[in-house]
Image 1: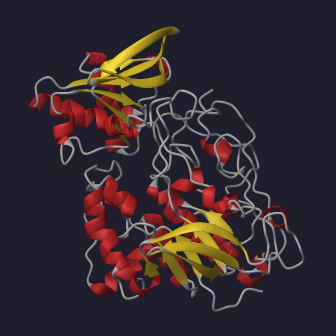
Image 2: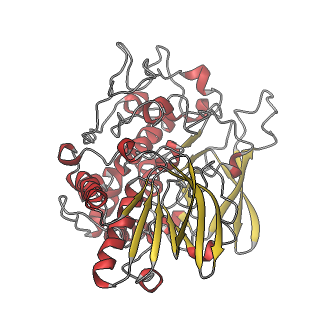
Image 3: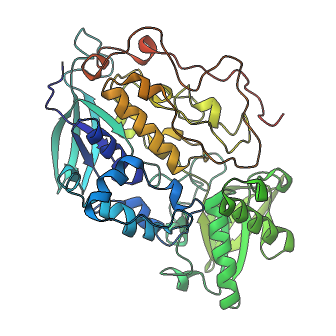
Length: 460
């Protein structure tokens, strides 16, 4: 059995990772948070200029607030909408500085490998589930080994953006022209303004990140003559989902989609739909983006590109962990049917706990944005509920682990229907093991969460 003194390692010191640590402490368990960046909230800092479409009431965690309140921290207005920078300043930084957490976070510490002690992925053996986890981490130029009783991977997906290429891989020339290509949501009204003012920019993507980038570029165009925006979609314009508009339970999320759609319809931006990118080259001082539009070969000339086509999980350091992943979404098989855009267009996903997140490697979970694999519909509040349930399971409180304590706002796009008799998480008839015993059970042996019956459009 793993030694009781071993910590539960949490990978990532973002909102969900810090919430996981808070919930573990509330359960009497010892967390150790490993953050690859030099400071906590490294990924959030990259989009610190972006205003969130969910208000503060959905962006703080109950266990985290319980650590903050004794320090004199004042909760922000629950109905106001923070930027990423405000999220860092007013919540994450104070949380990381609390007496309970500040000695349990290691920044500048990148996890490069995880395994079971003395057990490779292929090696079963009677002691596999009793063996502690071994993590190799890079810190200050050295590789160190740590041991853990359990691991919660909250490392997110921000560092692994999807490429511009139509095939799911980088287009030829994409890497070679990286100096003209930004991924995610660059600060076009801030630090990056000089690169985009008066220039033509091709935005690739159809989600909220792309919408934010386009809206910022349109605002820049009002200030800087000659600024031109091209917006490339991978599907026909009539099939693009701009969201639920006024029917969205998060008003700002609905408004974001409505504003973006209005820009396309008014001609304020030039829509290229469908446009599938095959190659990126240079033509004089401009990028020559070659692809197919409506089945015809087309070359688009642009000064810069912003690729906001979503993200994917980095699984490279999990090669020796036994994972169960849907082949398309790269989420667990229990969660994937709820979030796979190939099956439905719903933005609303019913809340779920640790049972839906289990992998065959007992004592290991992926939580937060990374738990959604390549699906784009994650909300921060979902991550908080995930880690609350995981911490309850690790403490052996299976009633609390199975209970769902979250109601998410509807997107207004459609409503998910579930097969009769299916539950929100698995509820095995037999007694569930506590942390020490959990190491001796696989996800399949312990519980098999139900899969929604209908692999069809939730709108149809």
